[in-house]
Image (cartoon, rainbow, N blue to C red; front, top):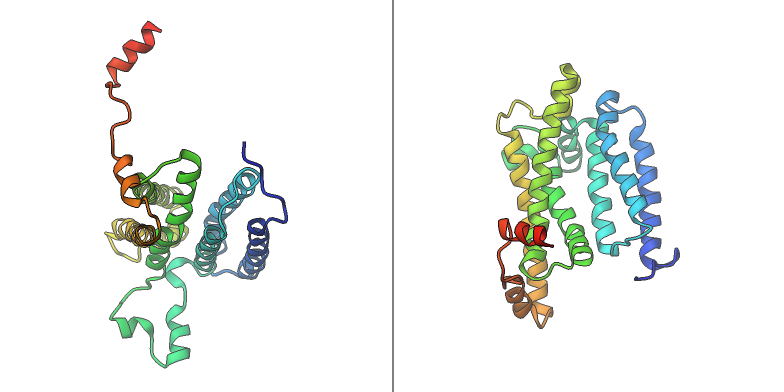
Length: 244
């Protein structure tokens, strides 16, 4: 069994520093949010994720790159939770800096902060997912790129279902604020597509780096697509199990 890194291991130090910075930001953004009920609902996910990260850190330490990517994504999320995703004032900030709104410069009509976060979900979390798959499941080659993309799309779909269920359960202004569709009937589909696109971008960048620096990239990719078990499974495997 691999030894668990010492508490002062650089990866753990990075985790502790990022956790401390995130805690400060979280407390600051917990003060007077735009909609306290929506803030609480959004932060339930942060709490669950934080508990999971804390428990897993005893047995699995991510790379510093992965911890940094996770940190950036969570920061974007708590900003959205503070203002509600459809009310994040990025346009006002951009106008104060440049004299004109970002939406007008890009020809946009709605608040697109939620779109940014869904894209960032894939862009920022696909690499930590890849690291998890490689180190826990020992996937290689094609599967090391496909599974993070697949997981991103699957969890994006689950989150949209969760949003729908929560909005239906709470109803009223809280349901509308949490759903954040801003009247777009294709909001869920666009969010899932952006998350998938973000993951695809990250996996393409990762693959390009591995093509450049990994000498056995082509062989590993080819080996990952070879049949490992020659005999069929399904009813044949069931029959073998019954025979003992």
